[in-house]
Length: 107
Picture 1 (cartoon, rainbow, N blue to C red):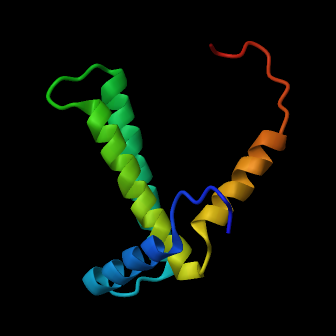
Picture 2 (picture 1 turned 90 degrees about the vertical axis):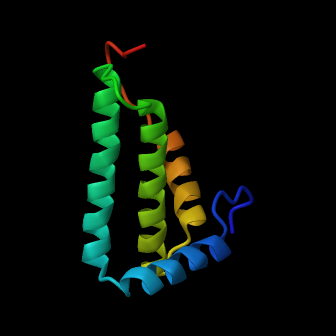
C-alpha cells in the first residue's frame, strides 16, 4: 500500500457494501456509465459557475459533484478489486514523469 493512503481499503469496502445493499451488484459497464453521468454533473456545475449563474452556490455544487464522482469511482475499483490508492499513486508518478512541449501556456 502507498504510504500516503488517501482512501483506505476499509472505506472502499464500506462503499461497495452500501452500494450493493441499495442497488445490487451492478455490472462494470453500468458503473462506468454512472461515472460518466456524475462527471457530466461536475462539468455542468463548472459551466454554471463560469457563467456566474445565480441561484446556488456553485463552488459547493462543484465539490459535491466531485464527491459523487469519487463514490462511483470507489465502486468501480471495488468491483474490479483495484486499490484506488495504488492507482492514484501510479497515476501521479506517470503524470510527474511526463514532459509536454506546449507553447502559449495559460497562466
